[in-house]
Amino acid sequence: MIDLKGKVAVVFGLANKRSIAWGIAQKLSEAGATLAICYQNERLKKEADALIPELKDAKAYQCDVSSDAEIEALFAQFKETYGTIHTVVHAVAFAPPDEIKNDFLLTSREGFRIAHDVSVYSLIAVSRAAVPLMTEGGSILTLTYYGSTKVFPNYNVMGVAKAALEATVRYLAASLGSKNIRVNAISAGPIKTLAARGIGDFSKILNAVEERAPLHRNVDQLEVGGAALFLSSDLASGITGEITYVDCGYNITGL
Image (tube, rainbow, N blue to C red; front, side):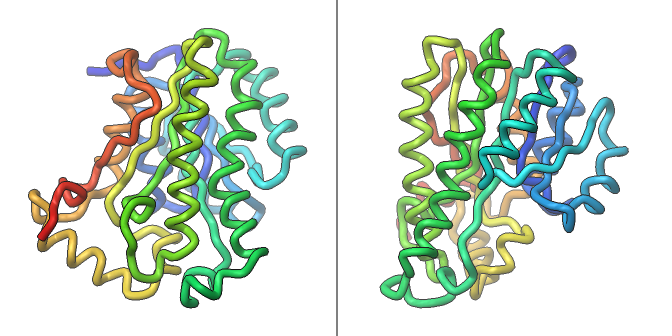
């Protein structure tokens, strides 16, 4: 049993009970961590407020990670409330709908910028704000997808952003290793989240995984949460800069 009692974990990206962030939060909470759950805006506050009571010692905070001012204000709150944090989970990604549904050749300059700002740069911004509070070392985690490496229909600029995110994980791992802060990514298989609704023919991807993955099924949020719990714990003390696949083995298959 992994014990995170006395540890503080910050989880960005809660949208609703289907969020991967929620699966991770549940697993961290079960292990005894004190949770700070972050949602993007006032529209998502109701969802967060409804879920938070299910977690012991958890509080909800609003933060749009595309705003440096909001990130700075948030971590000032964390310093006052918690003093030290040990785990940061970055479960955030976004691209404008047209950039997902249109042919990749038609990707706009502004759409490309937004996708990379929200999905990639925000990891750097959040990490920079977190580091002064991670005085005991710790773990920074983000979420990626196999579309970073292989072409998936209707994933388009998000695949490019996820590739940049994975490179960012490696560079941050090199930057923060001397502070005993580990940086890793989980490449989760497709899951029916709010974000997944924006991907056309998403059911075809789910069916392909079920047919071809060695385990012949799709993963769920709690399985991703289990991997996140491991990577947040001392059991993973020697792991940094890595992409860990939690996709029922789909990524190893050819045909």
